[in-house]
Image (cartoon, rainbow, N blue to C red; front, side, top):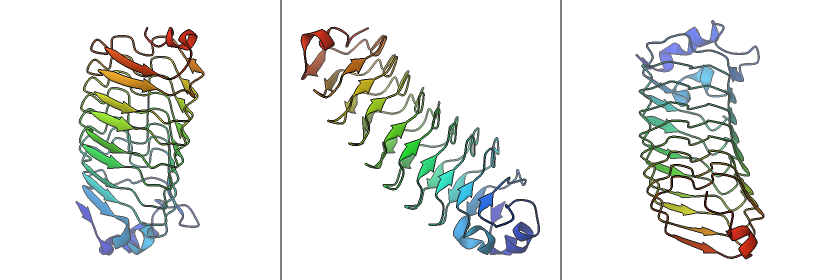
Length: 238
C-alpha cells in the first residue's frame, strides 16, 4: 500500500503522532510499501522517527522524508528487509542505534552533511549495501555500525571522525579500500577484522591507539603505509 495525501486525516486522528505532531511514534499499517512524508500534510512537520516506529515492517520498500526531520530513533527501521530506497534529508542530524539494522534491500545510502552521529549497529548486516557516502560532519560512528556489510567495497571516513569504534567494519568481506581521516586518534578492537579483501591501508600519523584484533583475518592485507613510530606500527596487525 502506497501512502498518499488521502492519509492525512487518518494520521491526524490516530495515535501515530505525539501530541505536538513532531514525533512519529508508531506506524501500525504493516502493509505499507511506500511513504513520502512530503505528500502527507500530517507528516511534513515530523522532526523525529520514534524508537521502533517501523520495526519489522517487512513490506516497506521506499521512504522519503521531509526536510524537517532531524532524528531517526533507535530501531526505527530495524528488520525492514525489503527497504531498498531511503532518501535522507539535509536537516537530519542523528541516526540512532540499530536504525536500519538488517535492511537487506538497501544497496546505497547517502548520509547528508548535517548528520553528526551514527549509532551502534545502525546498518548492521545490511549485506547488499554496496555504496555508502558519509557526510563530512560526522564525529561519531557507533560500534558495529556497518558490521557484516558483505557487499561494501570502499569507504571514505569523514575528516572530523576521531575514532573507528569496535567492530565498525568487521566482516565486511568485500571491502578493499579504506580512507582514514587525517586527524584520527584511535582504531578500536576488531574495527576491520575479517575484511578479507582489504589489501592496503594508510594509518595516519595522528593515530595514538590501535586495539587488539584490528586487522585479524585480513588475509590479503600486504601493504600498510604508516606515518608514525615503530612502537605503534607493531600493534597494527593482529
